[in-house]
Image (cartoon, rainbow, N blue to C red; front, side, top):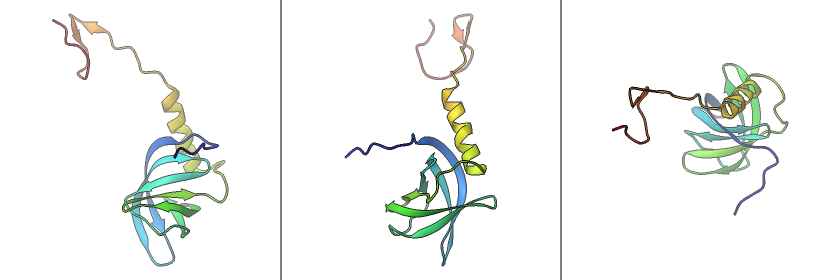
Length: 119
């Protein structure tokens, strides 16, 4: 089932610490929007309250869904500023930036990678 989201999720890789009343767990945010995040590396039961810590900056959230090693977190207030929002905006800007043209020298690509081989 596909759910229409009000905000676009942006792929990121942000190491964080997830803290509950009982524990602190190392994890990472792998996608982020103003309203929530997908966290990998740990999981908590659905409807659990937690906080996401990025270098001492805290965002509170509620677990919406949980699997063995990942979970979806909804923020009670949308991100509008701070380090989490700055990381989201940087990832958005990187997504919009076009890939630079790679010229060929002597029939061979300047950098390795995928594509056709020059004969």
